[in-house]
Length: 240
Image (cartoon, rainbow, N blue to C red; front, side, top):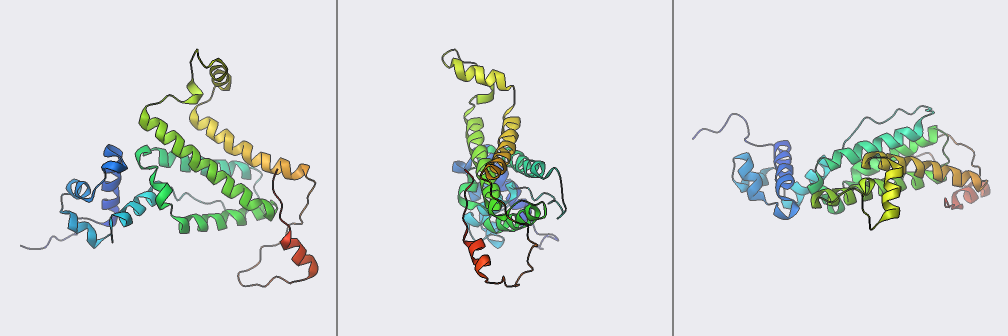
């Protein structure tokens, strides 16, 4: 029998098929046979593209995360909204597939995340944000983002009502708070990110700490170990 002119499957089509299986059956119902059946091939064919089931699942997890356009290294008066925007894009992207969200607990693509962190740290420096706050902002907003994703995904899978749309006579204060908020899950999430970043900045300003903005060093450029420089690097502050 002649070989087909094109491969029957590719990594991309296999990832899409795997995600479709998870959307329908959940991670617990995922299996290579189900993916192969959806692609019209035998399960061993998948091993031409993936070393293992876990390798395929790690690519599915990666596919959930949008690789959006990163902001240029320019001054931006709305830099806080840039962080809100990328967080919201990630939230929306993953929650299109709530059954797959849990994969990020096991298969978070850290190399991809570190590259993004480096870009955003550079961006924050250009916008005058003290370096001591960079990780507080980046790591904190990521924890808020992925925590919200996981809770929202599980609630949607279980068919539970959102806390932003609560009408329960046995929970009068929560119901009143929900009505007063008047926001969707998405709007409340965006507000949480925005208020977190603003809170970090406000807390740091209240502490009265100031750090001169330094130019970003080129890779490999050594920092002078003057006593002042050593003291500067040893300072550890927390946003209270």
